[in-house]
Image 1: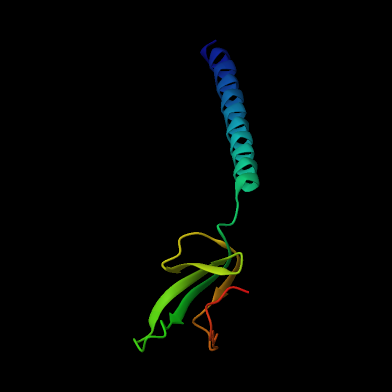
Image 2: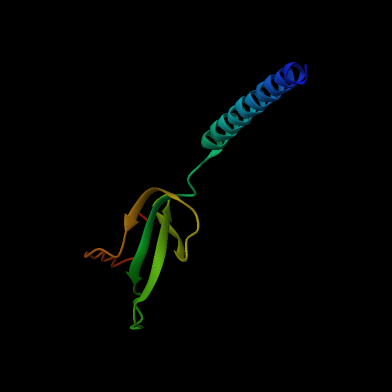
Length: 102
């Protein structure tokens, strides 16, 4: 008689755990979709780990450069993401002779 009473309790517990597990996955899926839809890039382009010269004869510094709307908006450590990310540690140069707007 005791075994018959324990079986429904175990089955009920399993059903409750299964429903909680499904609820857990559904809530995480909804959270993921909400976060994915609200994510916006902070910058248009971010160049990471580049060598930056200030043009005053000082030695170069290793820094990130963020560009938005065609203008430099941050030089140093850039925490935000860019629509396009470029690894600045690769070989190459970007020679800017003027800082004037177009």
